[in-house]
Image (tube, rainbow, N blue to C red):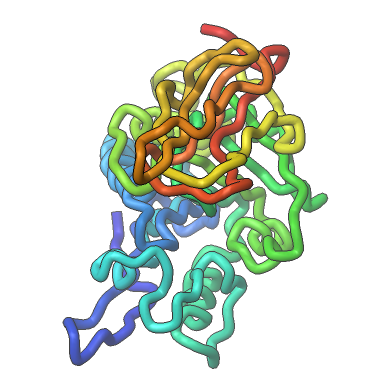
Length: 318
């Protein structure tokens, strides 16, 4: 393993310089790049990268890398935001994952995005450990944008429960995943269940999924033994059944992400903040599996996404 600093920025007069580092394994061939946190609350994404670095060091030491396989892991681009407890860049509230491919003469986040993208551009495969724009948890899954540049069947090799397709929106054209694809990389995003907290079980599941993908793509020798994956179901983001709030208040969920529900099952409730009166029962619109659930014990407004359900006909029950 080789550690290399990709970008350095000064946080003076508040603290010492902060480095964005990459960890390199195998040869210098550009086989796979993995990028973790680009936002200051993506703790799980960094943790997954840390576990992955441990696993790759052991595989490299055991001689289990293919001769022409080169992998880089960049755990975090958001240490500064994380250090001060902000999701976005503290100075101007910009989102690093909306700055790609970056600009080397621009603002700090543009230069940071440019440095990262120049480092990972040209890799045959790319994996981003992503998070959602709303707080909450997902069933761990693989996701790709239908840009026309993707190789969707490769997503089955991760062995996670779902492989989701999503049509890109105009705002997505400045994300890492989209630009990776435009510049020729086979890019996927993985949602590792949580964001603002560590879930070791889900993190280990995602690490095993990435290693299975590496073996499938010939980066690891065929004899490398890994935990078995599971049957993967293709789903489209447009096919998820979503439940919105109809009132504002405090929300509490009785069920958690991954639970199976029948149509009409009460998943959660919204309460009046001052009287604790139940204002709305959040009921499942169909039978299936809770794919996404909003964070518990938060104040919500009207017409916000509370949870989404994968319809039962798309679920593989275990």
